[in-house]
Length: 357
Image (tube, rainbow, N blue to C red; front, top):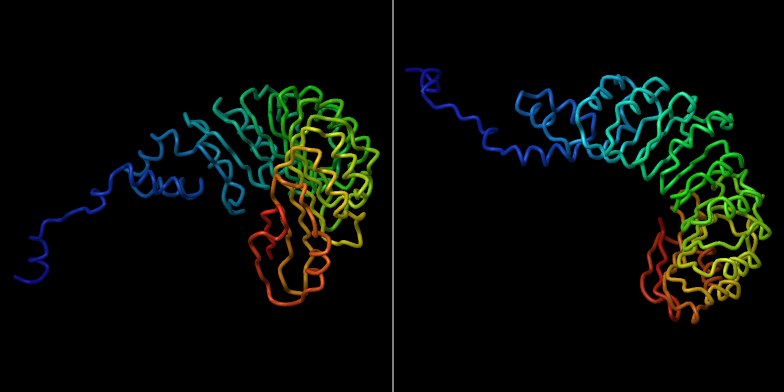
């Protein structure tokens, strides 16, 4: 009897059958939507697991889908009964793809991210999306044309959302005027928008009285030069983030502390000290009149060519003992050694963190 004949007498065992469906489902849940679709072609068992588990597609992220992959074939999964909660679309999603997708989305959808805004939204948002609570528009396709009147009206189909994020969009105040119909809006982010002005802030205060969190500003390469202290309005904000706004300095901080009595979180991001209005220790002390719990001051200046950027973050509720931030910043700005991290009590009354990112 040769070795082939002996091998034929050994009972064959399919070890893959020892792996439970629950374990396979757990493993597949960590894959991207593209890899899940490919895995469903491995065998009949895996296909049944993928197709019969409605939670497999709760969080769908196809932002990084390869360019050579047909997006339309993947979008076919939305024709099945899936409990999709969150969806992130890729930049190459065309108007046809997006329109088809929105027509197939289940009522469970709560979050949608559009990375291509170079399309006519008046032909896409044709029905209310009442259950969607978070909408993100990111201008990865470099659209330059502002939204026209028809497109802005179509955005009213999203008026039930509680969180709206706008990144690098060709912004004008017509969008802010439309927000008066967003009665449930609690969080608003408008970043990489150097065209924001004092009028924008005034319209936000008027049209979004229930807003609790606001994040706005320009970009590291293109600062916002239009927003000044005159644009700061009285409001009920609990959290505000100001990114790369050059003309907000000591006077602005003092006005913010008075105009926003409910403020709990305050964050400033800037990269070059000499390009921004001065923010001193004395002005930050004015925040003690607020019930502030988080103060974050981030300088993203590179210390040396080829080295990472510097971030200085302070967090503590006891701001009355605040001292020494500006001195430390100036000291670190002259440092040209190796990257370092200091954790611990940097200031009296502050639990601080100084980090190189």
